[in-house]
Image (cartoon, rainbow, N blue to C red; front, side):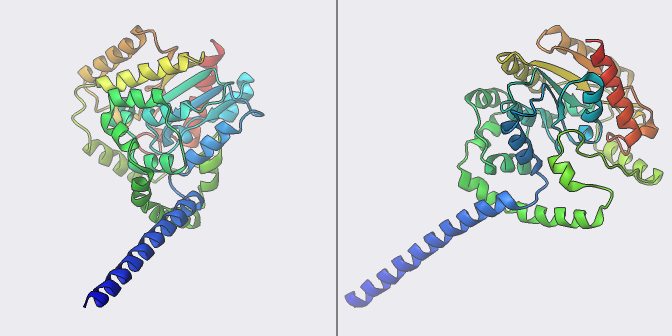
Length: 336
């Protein structure tokens, strides 16, 4: 019996070792596969690669923001009119917290940073968060968080800092969603001929240059769906964390002689018409408060710039809308 028990124990150990080796091999394989798969968050990898290999291109200006600026600001026009080299580093659902992470890797040639958000994005709690697919990609692509960034997140969003500190294996296991994302990206490549998704991931100047206007009914449904998730739009208030994240980013950038500017993007009049008088008054007060601290170099307020016909939905611009916004930015920067 002792001999038989010894054999069972030996087989168990061998099986356990095989499982461990298989798991390690699987993790190693998936880690490498992850880097190659198309993903809704892969733009971050291309942005980092560009920042790390930018000695020849040497950008002096960058724009951060969500997909709204990916289709809303044409840096090619900015560059040709102002004789500068600006990059549009917007990415899907990019929060200010994510912009802060990228800003830590900007080329030394950069002198001006513009964070670009709609009034609603500026006030949303997501401003200081990073949606998990984006955070997972940031970690899996090998980003190294600086002590400054971690300290800021510890103060403003401790849950985000805690998530970042988890071991990579935990994020690797959670990263299984990338397989689903890869399938989704491949299907969109086949079905959305109006969009150049490869360009959307890699382009540094006008990532979402392709625009397709939905029918009026479709656009209205999108706006109504958006408004149904909002409050009655009676009040407008930036929470303390959103305000402080902007100030902390400004301080970090100042250490390397970089100016932080806030660019408030156009708001669809079909959304704005629902704002109460108090909402508009409080919005103006919040902007004055941001100006009053003296940490932001300039604040450009374009939230009333465009009519409803220049919007694809509640926030994204048509091609014509993006041209008007870009030319307005050029005109204002020429005055500086």
